[in-house]
Length: 224
Image (tube, rainbow, N blue to C red; front, side, top):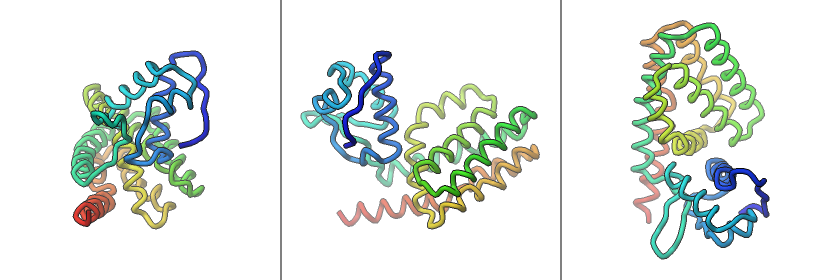
């Protein structure tokens, strides 16, 4: 676990949850690692009640689990988790892309182009964590551009788990620079207002990497 961090004196539980969340989704806290309230209290210089509240927030987001008598653990995505997130993401992203293409306006188009260019530039840097974040932000923007409030609410329920899933899928690429380019056709379909193509491309996007991740997890589980 990283060295000591200090929380500013505002919204202790929210700030603590924000830091822990980033540590989890970026892999600084390894999947399956144990989290103890006492150690976190010492690390962040806040009360145990604050730590407990922060961990409960992350539990509600599906990023940590609480095991009776053993404490808190960072989630470790198994094959079933990956399969569920993979299929759920295909449905949500497909609908979001279709609606975004149908509703695209100049302001939204500018934001989408900027997010896409940001992803491509990040890919040139080659940092897997930054790439995964830029990848997630692009897809989150497409959901926002859908203009569908309830879709956004459902996406938000699992968005942190989706961040972990995207990072895991991106790790299946041998060439990180191609990740940005693989989004090009999807972005262009939305910008062109081609709803059918946008939905199809969103559903197909990263299908092979998602399938590879699921297969890899299943193989590891059978070997245990």
